[in-house]
Image (cartoon, rainbow, N blue to C red; front, side, top):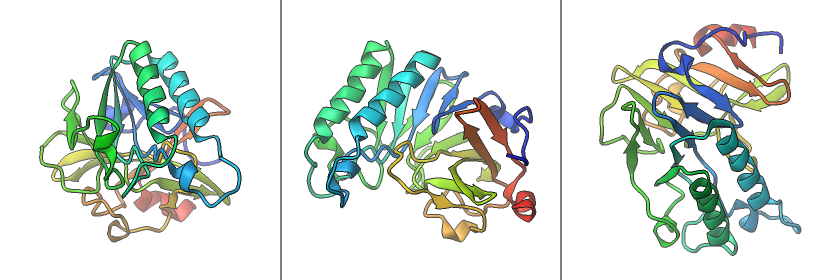
Length: 241
């Protein structure tokens, strides 16, 4: 990846955040946050063979728990892919995820997203959740009720295309929402295609927390190389793409 610098820090609290496998660990809160698991997408996919959703989600979460040993874990919305019924296997997958968190000695909080119409039949949940460092975690599809110095959201499944290759990315925006910072997470499920943000404007996003894009800095994780690339704000970076 010729552009970007693994050693260049993002401003503010993102400088201390640790980005791994589409999730983020916030040391000041001792919390691991991931969004858009979409459990059940495998079951409703138009394919003849299952896509291994449960093994993928549980295996990756287990690795993250082992890496960070967080005090708490937050699922930031769209935990399910379920609108009018819960697909077969979903409850067992969610139970397996909850077991992993409990066995790691962490507390789990589940936040509701716009795909979570049936979430209450599977697990208790909240509309938003405040971490120990005052970060507010919400899904991002609605205007949050609470105010905070920073928000962590999901919902839009950001990805970026660099040299013809599409990669999931985080978007870090300092002071972009009512004077507060916003971190947008990529979808944790690998069954989501991701929305390429290279040329998107704020009006192209579904989240009310993203009203402009020029100030958002893409952050890309290279798991194979064990490196995190933090790029300039999109307003500057677009001319290099």
